[in-house]
Length: 152
Image (cartoon, rainbow, N blue to C red):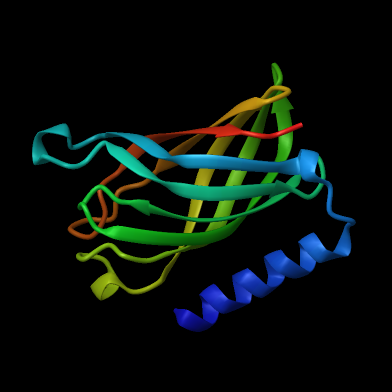
C-alpha cells in the first residue's frame, strides 16, 4: 500500500508540474463533514483537518491532506479527481486515491479508494460532495461534504 501511495503522490506531482503553477487553481479546505449511514454507531461526523486541491484543467485535480476521521484517529489522503461531466454547473466524476489511519481497515495502513464525487465551484468558494461506500466491519459509509476556498 505504501508503494501505491507513493505512486499516486508522484503521479499527482508530475501532472501538476506539467502545467505552469497558477495560484488561482489552488483550493484549501479545513476537512470534511460526514453524514454517516450508520448514525447510531457514535461516529464522528465533524472531520476537521487541512487539505489542498489543485485544479490541473477542467477535468483533473490533484489533492492531498490530513483530517480527524470518523473513528477519531488521524488520517492522511492523496489522490486525483477525474470529473469529465458537468450537469447544471456541477462537475461529476470520481476521486481515486489512497487513505490511511482507519484502525479497522488494513491495520490503519494505506488502502486504495475510488469514490464518486460532485463539485460545485464559484469564484472563491467551492463544495465537494463524495459518496463514501461502506466496507463491512472496516469503514462506515457516508455522504461527505468538503467546503473549500481559493485565494484569487
